[in-house]
Image 1 (cartoon, rainbow, N blue to C red):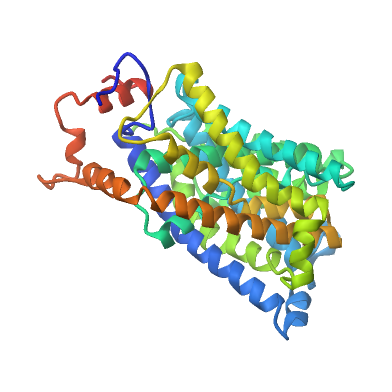
Image 2 (image 1 turned 90 degrees about the horizontal axis):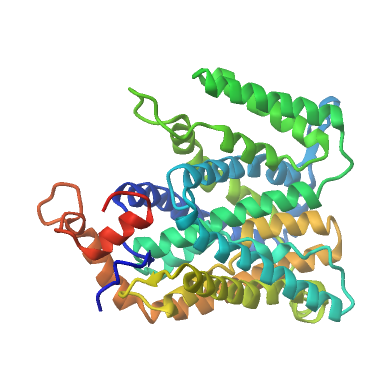
Length: 442
C-alpha cells in the first residue's frame, strides 16, 4: 500500500539527524530504566523484609545545613535534590524538541501534543470520578497523569522488542510533553506558602544564568555554583525545587555556534543524562518505592477510592486518552498512518504509557505527604504500572515480527558508509513525506 504523498505521514521514517539524536537519548534511558527497575525491586524487598526498620531509618535520616533551610531527610534529598537533575535533563530534551525536534512547527507538534494532553486529562478525570464516587480525596488527581519513559523503555528492553524508531520517538515525545505538564502542575498546584524574597533570588539567578548563556560564557565553575544557588533558593521559596532544574534546562542553548562541536545543552545532556538515569532516578525510586505489599495493603489498592482512582487512571485513562487523542488528531490533521504499521501499534504504546513510576510517585508524595493514603497511592502506582507493563507487553509482542522486519530495514547498511541504505534510496515516498512533515526539503 503506497502512501498518499499529499497527506502528512504519521509514524513515518524519521529524518536521519532526528533519528540519531533520539537513538542516543533512548539508549541512555533504556539502560537507566533497567537500573530503575532494579532499584524499585530492591526497595520493595527491603521495605518488606525483617530489616524494614533499617530502611525507614535511612530514608528518614536528616542532614544538611539548617541555617540555609536545607535540613532534609534522605528521602527528601532524593525527591527535591536528585530529581532536579532528572528535570534538568527533561528541560533540555523539551528545549531540543521545541527547537529542532518534533515540536518545532505547529504541523508536527499538533498530533503528539494533542495525544499527550488527552493522555493527561483522561486519567485526571477518571481519578476524580472514582474518588468522588467512593467519597475519597481529590488531592491525588494529578498522580496518574505522567508517563515514565525510562521504565517503559526498560520494559521494552526486557521484552527484546524491536520497535521502529518512529514508535520510540512518538513515545519519547509523549513523555517530554508529560514532563512539562507535570512541572506546571507541581509548580501551580503543589506550592506551599511562597517566600517572595527567596523566589526573587531564584529568578535573579535564572536571569544571570540566561545572560551567561547569551554572552557565551563557558566553564562549569560558573554554572555549578549558580545552579546550586538557584535550586536552594527555589526550594526555600516554597515552589518545588525540581522546577529550578527544568527552568535551567530550558535556558540552555541548543543551537551550535560556528566552530562548536556541540551546543551547551548537548554537552550538559551528555554529562548529566547518565547521572540522571543511572543514579538520581534510581536513588529516588529506592527511597520512594518502599511500600508494604502485604495482602491487606494490596487490598486497599482496589477498595479505597484514592488508590483505585490511580490504578484506573493509569490503565484506562492513559490508554483511552492517548489512543483517542492520537486518532482524532490524525483525522483532524488528515495525517496518514504509516502503511507498514497499524492502529494496534498505537494502542500498545498507549497502554505502555500507563507506566507512571517516577513522576507519579513524586506527585503522590506531594499530594498525600506522610499519610497512610499516600502509602496506598504509592502502592497503586506500582500495581498500575506493573499491570500496564504486562498488558502492553502482550500487545507489542504480538507485533514483534513486523517490528523486527522494519528495524532490519531501517538499519541495513550494505555499503558500510555509516548511513542506513533506506536514506539513500531514490525518492522513497516515506522519506519524502517525513521530510515535509519535519520541515525539511524532500
